Length: 150
Image 1 (tube, one colour):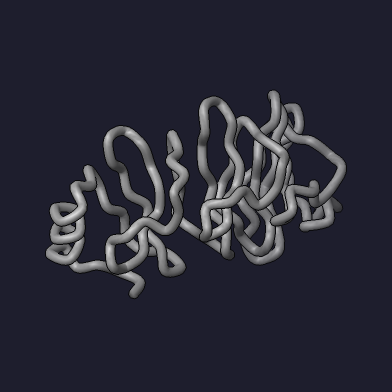
Image 2 (cartoon, rainbow, N blue to C red):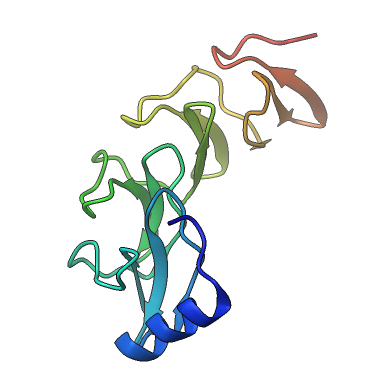
């Protein structure tokens, strides 16, 4: 089940007392209840016990979450995918996710290992093997290994 009709979402929302039900992504949907966020299965039951301050949809098997001031990715069972914590994480795209730690942006693999050594002032998500990045006042494209694509 990838999408809920408006009636199905309303039924799950009312039956379980959720404040909000998002569309399903990779078999799970994020919901809000009592100011906390988590994922549910298509039957409305929770996918895991942990509650977060923010969650995002699953992409490429992982979902970004916020706990306090830190963000990281979790697996569908709610367990962290790695130990590292970031200021911001985004969804995985083409096997990499953009993250910010301190004032710098870069991309990580699903195990949180950096995809390349360089750090940037801003990065977008990869699309068709390239990503636009900002270093100082210069915008340019890089490949997943960090080499410039001029």
